Image 1 (cartoon, each protein chain N blue to C red):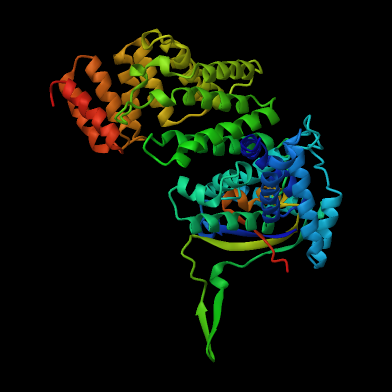
Image 2 (image 1 turned 90 degrees about the vertical axis):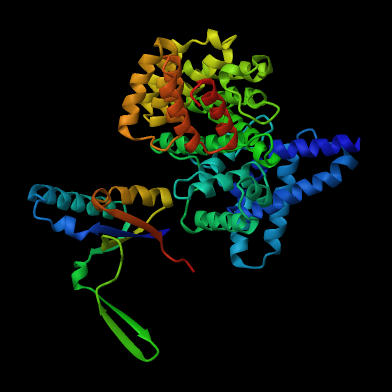
Length: 417
Length: 117
């Protein structure tokens, strides 16, 4: 039974850590105390569960143990301030906005939404929002977060301490923002989760396993958010987008660690379960009739994910979606992608026209994918000499060896290397 | 919680000759409206406008010597032009109060919590 109990604690850690910490912060207002008591509760589970069996509702068990620990510690604290906090533990104030609407079938209110909004408050620096989210909601240790972001552990520890002090000293509220602030703040939470996902997604097979794991943590948190904000289509859209990207994780690189383009990927290696889940989420989001940038990006990713092969890709639809995205959330990178899609739908000359407008704006100067895309369009237009010149420019700007190798191969294919 | 709003504006821009009087007048009006609203809500504790930085000097004491110099030496173009002390439920309310002040549109408002022992 012991290995089962240990597995149950590990699983409960993944599922319940954020919820226990969130609840304890809600009760005590003390972030350090909340983390310490949550840690104590999991340590206690490692001792008790192999002996007494896994409780029927692990989350409720862990929250109760953590809360009792907090009450004990506050009682032992002699100061008046501790007595005040104890009163708060014994009669926790409910959030007037959300009430206990987050309460689920386990009977424990789910405070994770408040915790997400507080961790992602715009008064905190972006890197602190990311670190705080990983520490308090996902339960990564300071050492793990430091490794994932390639900075020394003491630096990360300081970053977390400063962020927690700022929440306390500047009076950043622990709550789901009121309706008038909600759209912008929700966008802020989604942006942090997407950043986390991309940090993990950009990590290649050779890099640190913790770094790769960031994508899985981001998906887990996006899942929690999509459940707690089920009427927010962008939350569903973000989760769908992550799942579509993640479904291609294994096919993105070859055995040598080189990037494989979407066109050349083995589609049999794509995770059908993730694609199916993403499709369902995207449909549910689009039915709400409130399109947003994540839903549109997910819709584009869905076009690729559901095409039986590269040739069958619905490029006309992708070009339309990029046009909508460019209207809703204009950015030069979106314009670049739109040019690629238009080139696929209407021919390379039409794509090149859009690309030249983008080049004239100077917005993406120094970005290697700009000359790389121009080279590709020129190659398809039967202008190999000009294509080779653009490939050479792209090679000079490419940030990674894998990308340089890819561009060199393409350059060689022009016959003008 | 108490916060101080520190209003920083570019004095030269404010005093520039092409700044038409009508716009200036509307800023004055919206300032009066802000004060009235915040006093009505019980948010505004006190606040004042400062004279231009040209009227300022700095005092330092090093050892037994009193050092007096002309003006502050901030590198930035924006100078502190006034302050308000406000009493708010939390930072979100303080941000809302600060964003309604006219200097937020022409300059920068620093929102700083007061030290609480």
